[in-house]
Image (cartoon, rainbow, N blue to C red):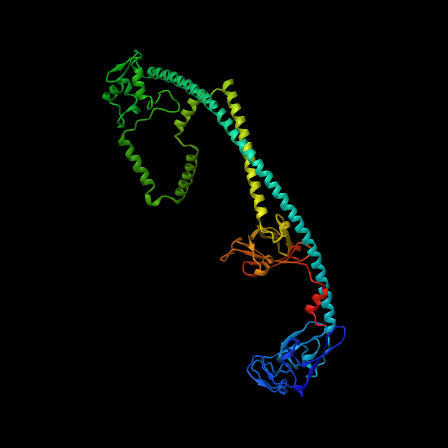
Length: 530
């Protein structure tokens, strides 16, 4: 009878002991199944006679009265798997003709030709655990070495930080001293350069004045048509460009106004007239500025009409418009090169050439300039050194205060990078900095995230690294990467994947996460029931 079927288990030890229990019941629940005593369902719902346990009829709602049959749909069967790892299978798999338990106990009444493979599987399991223990042991030893090196490294950085902070104070004092020297020697330099510039401006003013007088005398001779030593109002009227009201003609009254209210002026009095006309006057002998050809207004009208008739407004060829646009573009580019009218620019350039360039500084001024420049160079060099020291202090403080693990075991990863090459990409992990992906055969690099935080569970926070805010996906979120750290003797990236869009997973082996391994015997005791 099924209810009377019991399992005999030999427990490894100094002597073999027979432990009786109903089929499908694990050792830890043996006390609930005592032969000869009423059985209470494990959920406490009811109590039944013991002979109804494993009678192939489901009496308990939780299926606990049928641990060794397939009667209860929610029941479970315990595979003892002596020599290997115990396991539970759904009760529906009992006697279904398929060997689920390596010790064949689930197929006790199906006739299936099952073989007990637990010992062989246990042997392989023990070999695997042995290798895992050896790797964990070596990794842990490496971790201890890393911790020792990190401790020494932190002490060295602390000493370096103290040294640099001390040197910063000296540099700050040096910079302030050089600043004072610089400002002291720059003042006489500034005054000497201003004196030199003023002397040059005065010299240019004299040159301009002499040029202006020479030009005035030249114009006087041009205007004095009858060479009588006077410039008359009539002689001025030949220059319509001097017309003050821009009506196209210089009247006798307007001409007299330019002469100071008189009919004519001599050379001495012409100076006042010259100041009134020199900005508008066009020389009769100037090759660049020929006298304008006067055209009666009535002759200009037909020309405009002819142009209009030849190209009516609605029939202007498109090519002409394109040409105009090209010309406009050319004009725009020319405007960028010439900020003032060409004639004015040419005249100013000509004046500058006539006046010459500013003469070199005298020896006394040049000595002051050289001294000031030397002081500036020394100040700039000291200020640059101070900035570099500030950067060095900032980097040292950051590295010293960084969370490199409980014993700084991850410190050796700082400023290092590790690559993994696949068929398409080269993945690059720079711990505490960033993760990137670059096409293997050309193309730009993609940022898969910058350092964010330790992201493991509360009881093992250093098991995962999180890198965030990488390059944005097309119409998606920014890329991010989770790095899973596994114990090993080497430091290497072993795999990458993209389990979700724009979210990457990277496997990374490092001895920094290795813990002191238990003995192989305790591991076997935990995983394998002998």
